[in-house]
Length: 126
Image (cartoon, rainbow, N blue to C red):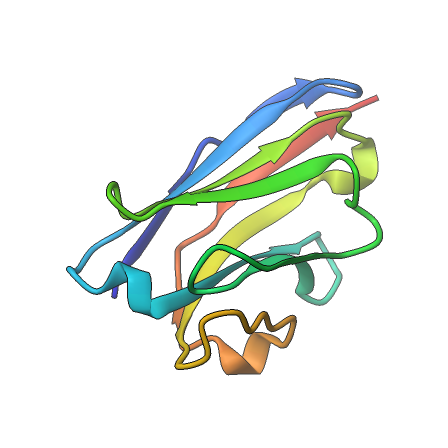
């Protein structure tokens, strides 16, 4: 599967953005999805994971209550709605996919994701 992330940009603190991740291929529903981010000089970190069937999600504590992941299997797209953005949310955001045979399983481990998009930059000004 190939992934194309979009929707990043510059926003003021407290603002919102919605990121999209469009996937190619006809077996999108076979993949569990996730969003990760990497700030300058820092390691890539987990943001949120989504199970293959869409029934399970897992959010990093730093974004819980502010970010929401959703997926549209008909459109082969995953979304990340980001509200109440903070300057520390500034990073390059990546969507990722992994083949998953357990419908409800979520993973926060980057090594389990075999497919990555190119990243979209989110900058939050104070």
